[in-house]
Image (cartoon, rainbow, N blue to C red; front, side):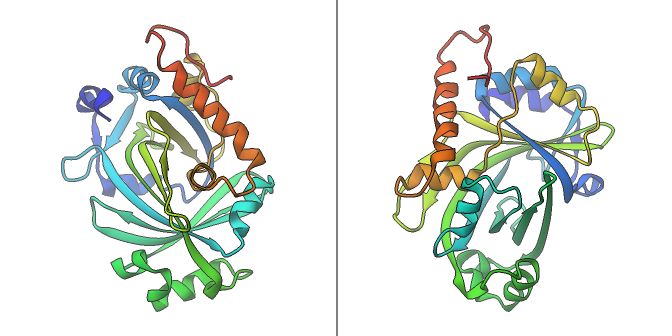
Length: 268
């Protein structure tokens, strides 16, 4: 994200090995959405309190993901219908490291997210069923689903900045240039210049990042890139719940047109 490049250079780096202490695979997630100008202001305020992840000298990482669902979109519908317990299945390419992982995310009715994953080859990114290891893993993690019934639904591409507080008790991902491709109808979409931020921590410990967002009048906004991507690229899907979020995103994007010194808020 060019708008924060100079600020990123001022931040102390943290390596992937050092990041191992803050994996937070079983965590509480809080998401926020803001436009890039507000994010630049946010970085100017937090830069001395956080490390920025650096891989081979790069502080911005690229990600490609392919999401799977049932033929009748069960995982999408469960989320749309506001069920607290839900799952996601994807194969993700961590472009800068060259790694591929098959990942399952479970969210329970207490708001905690648990992620399980196994490393796979590039063939599994192209087709989930191409690797025997994915069947064993997915059937174990998603026993109520028929593995052979999973269908490739959506791809997402984005760039990510990851920061870690200096106590190493929380990790924040900042995703931008988010783009979607719908495998079923061929439609493309995206949400730039909006930025999706996710605060990940064990429990609800005090967070300087969250405090700063509050001062900038940026409030939490729950958003699933998979579900928003499906809704934006396929108007035939049931999406009553997501229409409200899409309207909020559109209003938030319009706020960027105002003077940078204006008060910006997701309270819209």
